[in-house]
Image (cartoon, rainbow, N blue to C red):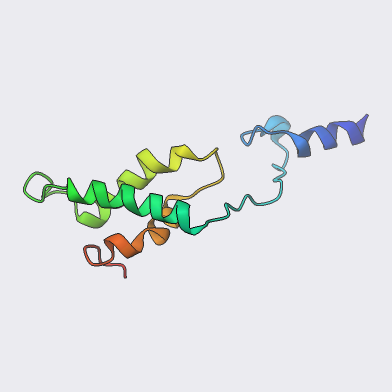
Length: 104
């Protein structure tokens, strides 16, 4: 009975499973496999966002913050929960934004 309960917790797909105050058991780390086609599509999306960026309209937000916000709010949700981080998207798309953001 105890083994079954532990196995159920390990195999649980619900990442917010904090029942009974015990330690949360994490499965293997999810790592997305990038390829050139997907990287190019990401860069195209970021480039379109940058082309529509209005400096006068967005004085309060830097170009870097604009890119990070776009990636986190609009691109990251395209992956299942836990499979992608905004910082990874930022890094993978830097060839189109590095000349405008402070991070090369």
